[in-house]
Image 1 (cartoon, rainbow, N blue to C red):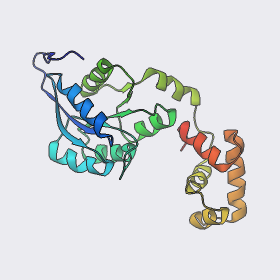
Image 2 (cartoon, rainbow, N blue to C red; image 1 turned 30 degrees about the vertical axis):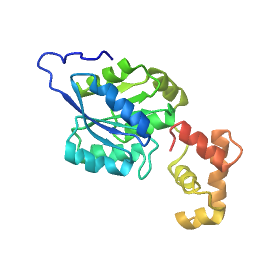
Image 3 (cartoon, rainbow, N blue to C red; image 1 turned 180 degrees about the vertical axis):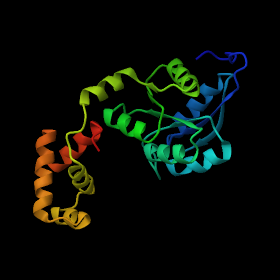
Length: 213
C-alpha cells in the first residue's frame, strides 16, 4: 500500500476493527492500514469474545478477524457480528488457508477471506471491494475448496463426529447423542471409510480441513 494515497473523490473514510491475539501482528497491521488515507482503525481487540462489544461501540464498516483467538474463535465471532450488526462486513484474515475454514467463514457471514501472506495491496483492495458489496476470496483457497467437493457425510454422521471431538469414548458419544453404542460405532466406521482415514481423530481432522463439518 502506498502511504498517503488519497481516498477516491466523494468516498467516505472506511472504519476498521482489528481482532488478532498477537500484539505484534495487530499493531503492525494497524500501522499499515493507517497509512491509507481512506482507512481509519477505530477498534483493536486481542480476543474473539471482545469483538461484538467493540463493534457495538465503534460501529466499524469492516471487521478484520483472525481465526484462532482466545475466548471465541474468529468464525464464531463473525457469526455473532453479522447477526447483530449486518452492516459491518467481515473479512477473515488468517495464516490458516484451509478449505474448511473458508466454508465455515462463508456460512458465518464473512464476505472476505484473505491469508496473511498476501501482499499488503491485496488486503487494501479486499477491504475496498467488500465495502462496495463484493465478495473477496483468496483464489488459491477458493480452488482448493471447490476441489474438496461437497460433504459425503450424513447429518447424523456429522453429529457423531462432532461429538467425538473432545476425545471421549464410544459410550460418551452415545450418551451425549442418545444413541446406542452400536449405532455410534456404525456411524464412526462409515465416517472413517468415507474420509479414507484410519481412526476417528484422523477423520475429524480431514472433515475439518475439507469443510464438511
